[in-house]
Length: 374
Image (cartoon, rainbow, N blue to C red):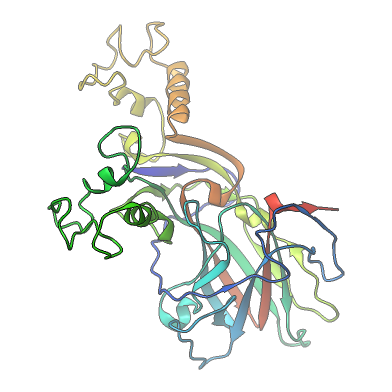
């Protein structure tokens, strides 16, 4: 089962791109941690950045011949060619315990064949960026352009209360085929697939490891997640592209948060029964609304599809059906939504077009911990 994204607005999105990442971990938080207990007042600096707790991501433009080793820690930096287009991806996982910005792959796809990947702690941010290093000469450009994209998004499909007693405990873990070999090992057997930490017993520590599995993910996988199935031709971020140019004088940061806000509709792909990429009356008429195992004949009155009972199946019934889907969490209407809020795990990215830039600095300020003063 998956989700389908149908969007309306500014610039079309082409589709979903699956993620391939190399794992290396390093973290950075600058100018105070983002885990401060109370909101802090923010005052605008002369460089355009607010003050206050934030995370830093530095994007370095490198000349031809640069060798980038994705196995080495990246700190808070990623590396892309000085000229050309690269993909930089950002991940948020709502069930992750990550508390710092982590660069999983510091190398752009031009260097190692897959995108640079950074993970943000869960939450909403105000985002600022500026271009640094030497200003451009008269005949030499120094600029970058960001093109935002939704790469993929998915929800946790794991059922944790296996025995249905209303609680998730070790008894549920013992009913799970953890290693996926098709056989559930006998409870108490040592070694056991359920002894996740290898200490010879299956206890709360192993349960905690099992429940934390989703939080470790930075890409959608068929085995554990329900994926959002695709993006139609109508979608848009609030800002479809953002250009920064390095000119003479002091470089000031600009607010780029609108690149992270999205307008559109997301719904479960299993509901698009006619496969046209939209949710309409045709899909309603093909759906077993009452769950009796049979789809009533179209046009039959009374019909399970005549939800309001007026003798016809029309847009009023469609609206009632969609309303029920919203309540069930199978349909979302997004209006300039923070892109990472649309699912449990979201991979967002930029097609990052570099034209001579040596360094771009991006800062993420947690909205729930910061008061922004104009």
